[in-house]
Length: 138
Figure 1 (cartoon, rainbow, N blue to C red):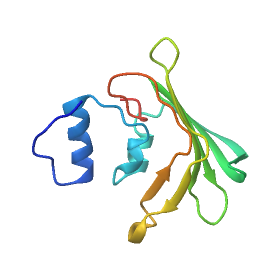
Figure 2 (tube, rainbow, N blue to C red):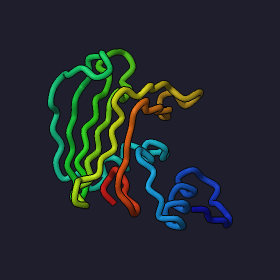
Figure 3 (tube, rainbow, N blue to C red):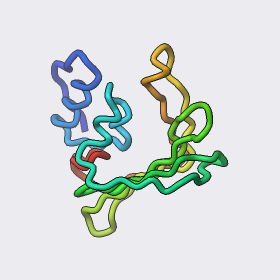
Figure 4 (cartoon, rainbow, N blue to C red):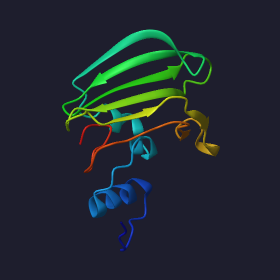
């Protein structure tokens, strides 16, 4: 699949343009937006703090969120650097409930914007399903 056209100037606008033009699903794309927190929390119907649990051998804050079409859990390092260490997304649509799972992501601050931007390298992940679905359920 490919498309061509004038790509908007910002990363947020460019991502939206790609999704609209191609219908492509990019797991974890919400982490690439300038305000990833707002995108992740948009349309959350329920959130639960589940306590401290290990992920990738690291003590992490384990949180679970429910949305109309998506359930997701995130494990955030409980140490000095509050970085995501594990993410599981389950889509409620489809016969088998397609999922994205980043079991042992390697996360590091990204350059000068270390306080706001992250690079997430999922060591193991899978995605099944079709159509445009954001982690935030749209």
